[in-house]
Length: 183
Figure (tube, rainbow, N blue to C red):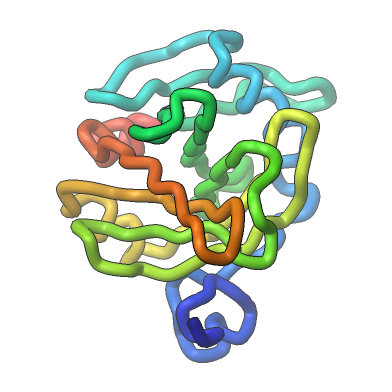
């Protein structure tokens, strides 16, 4: 698959809305760690929107509480492989991020694939691995957010080998409503 199908800097120069941008310091690694822990039943559930939860927490050193829209899923054919999707607005309210925490052991060069209604959207590269999984991050533009709002199905795809992709079906039920309620 050529570089135009990857969410990366070369794609950004061609106007690809799925381009990865590092948001160093805006949200902070502690927030990511807090949210991935929150997805495991910590952090305050502020509200539920369809299959999504808004969870809020005050990370160490943060000025105030930060909230994100979260959903965790497992692969249909592998109950031991889970994925957590985190959608949030940056603290300065200028950007929308989607972070996906995939299980350890994922093949990093293959990235994270996304299909909406069985149409290939592209791939995002993994930006770091933590003790609880590897993280792919994209800055969502209005086009991607609109696609997520209107699509019926989403499937995130990780690879354990170059030939073996594992699909994680994700419910989009409540995503639009939940996103609109994010502080």
